[in-house]
Length: 98
Image (cartoon, rainbow, N blue to C red; front, side):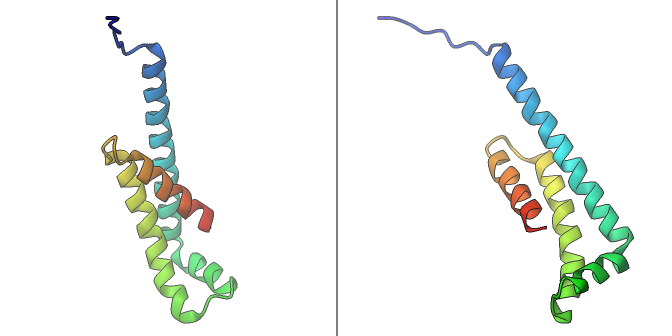
């Protein structure tokens, strides 16, 4: 019988460091985007209205988008390893929407 010894090598450490760096960078980007939209909410609302959204949808989106960006930023930073694929996917989906 052949036994394999599984070791956590340098490749696994560098891969996990890369994932961690991506988590922090994407979370920082989401926080910056949320803060920008929150601090200049009147400009963001005007941009939403210029995109031909109905007025009834523009105001809720002006509130929901920065909240969603901040929430995704926190999720990326606080996610368990099993939740990371979903957090990255949700962040990517939000980025594709805008």
